[in-house]
Image (cartoon, rainbow, N blue to C red; front, side, top):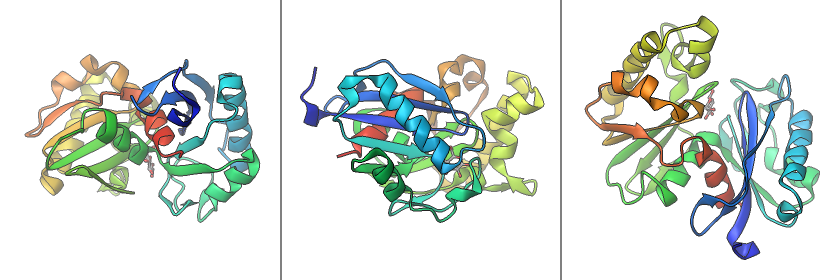
Length: 250
Ligand code: BGC
């Protein structure tokens, strides 16, 4: 196994599930099994902290002394969470970094989930050495976005909250909309096509990457989507958040 300074724990807190793994920071790969626990109802800070502790226990003694990076589905600026679309409103303007450092008794790093996934792709995946603008979109409970421009992340780009028919576009096109409304893959791909057309019109990306839980079965929707830019599944698919969060832990 890599030396302890070359390893960190990444924790990806989503609206539906919380996932963690031990990451090799040189290779950007999971060294452990991925462990998962459903996100506690309401996703209040104290319940999320308790579940983070359970995840660390599930990872076992190997994880005990490792630095921890946590990614979360809100705007995160200087360790504070500044939005709360799919989590408790208690996260609005909340000192998340300090809260978790105190709760876990060690330094941690808190970052937006799509930004973590974007960093993983930039450092170890599909956006490495990519020139121009890459937009990573994560499709899950919400829609997350990371803008990667010539090797740099532009943080906290909230593309899931572009307005569409009077509401955030994630309400219309996220994976959760497909599940909630019982859409067929074809119907959902039609909505994604509208979303990606809009993104292309606004930002003219060179490459579009897709992450989030749905990246496990791209054959169900990806062949139906046509974009000017190349579009493909993120190299680290649904593990990108864990890997990116871990890579910020040190
Ligand atoms: C949040 C984003 C997050 C995305 C994906 C959105 O509702 O506002 O911060 O990246 O969901 O989880």
